[in-house]
Every structure is written in structure tokens, then in C-alpha cells.
Image (cartoon, rainbow, N blue to C red; front, side):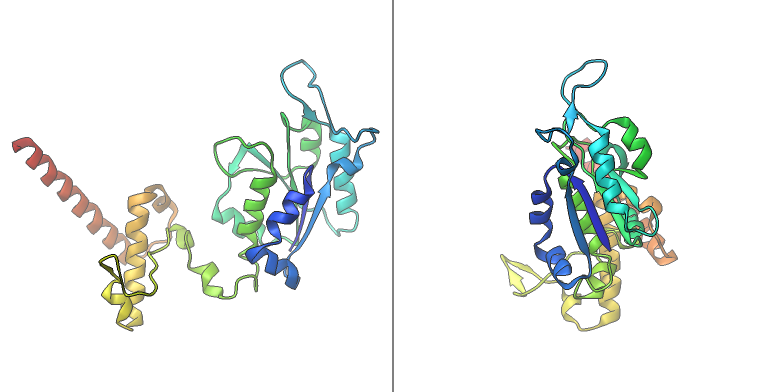
Length: 258
């Protein structure tokens, strides 16, 4: 996987991604990163890349020419045009399924905006994917780009030491991850569940699956709409919902007679 990030702050991208899992992947050559400084393509003697918006309004807008020239330089050696991700709160919200799809690409270009945004004409000409990491506004696109690169890189074969870490963590089958425990067996009066100490792999897997279902129902129930569920999963969820309904009913009765 080759990442190309068009940015005003290449050092931010480089420093952020040359650590931890992505840092090891870069060092081993499993992924490649090129942070391109858009200012290097400015024809202005002061290296300005922004100007006042037509029609008036607050702030500045990034000019199309430096961005387009930077992009052209990046893609000149590619056999086919890459997908270009513009990180913006106006885009589709980034999800694990998107990471899985993007991880199949050979090249990805990320365009990081600043100020009041980017001239619409260059977006129309270059961008293939408008993606947001959430419904809030940041000062620039660098942090969202790094978030997405991290999530995508974890899915590249060989990046994680343990293949299961990528396959069975949070959002596998659109479910939240089950609880995890390590030594000591007892901490602050709380013990590791007996099933995890039993050595019975079948029981452990069943417990983990049920805990994933329970946690998803409690914390992110909307994920269950698109989850990959077996008949046993459906039966377990119905049992949980029934128990929750009974608990609520009992609480209501107690409240009525208190």
C-alpha cells in the first residue's frame, strides 16, 4: 500500500505515522508514505496557497492550482488514477467497512484541507471519496487522514504480528469486541470469569461471542442492523431483550408501590 498525503504540514503526517504499528510497517516496507507539501507547488514568491473567497465571507480558501500540480506530480508514475480521499465533515462517516474496501487499493491519495476549505473546482476534478471521521470540525485534514491510514494499515497482510488481531477485534461482523482480561486473576476484588480459565476453547469462544452481542446491544444497538448473525445469535439477543424488558417491568412495579 502506498499512501500519498497532500498537506500543508507534512512533518505532522510523518511524525504521527512513524510510530507504533504504522511505524513498524513503514520500516519493514509493508506500507509506504509520501507526505507532499502543497506549498512546494505554489508559484507565489511567498509560497501562499490561499486567497479570499469570491462572494465575500470570513476566512480564506485553498487555491486549486498548487493542489492540482502536487497531485499531478504524485500520480505521474502510476499506471492508473488512484482513489483520492478528501477529508471533510461533509463526507460519509468513516467505518470499518470503508477501511476494508480501501485496504485493497495499491495507491491512496489523501487531500488535507485547511482554512475555510478548498476551491470546489479542484475537488470536482480530483476527488473520488468524501469522507468524515465524525460530526465535528477540526483545524485541518491531517488528523482524520492519519486516523484512516492507521485503520487501513492494520488490514494490510503482515502489518499486525497476530493475524487474529485484525480479524477478531472490535467491529468484526459489525459487533463490538468482547471484554479482555490478563494477570492477575483477581484485582480489586474482581475475578477473571471462570470460563476464560477453563481451557475449554469451545466454551471460551461461545462466551466471547455472547459478550460481543451483549456489549453491542447495550452500547451500540444500531450496529446490529447490519451485523452478521447466526440463528443462535438471534436467539441469544432475544433472550437479552426479554430479560431487559422483565427488569424494566419489575422496576416499574417497585416504583409504583414504593
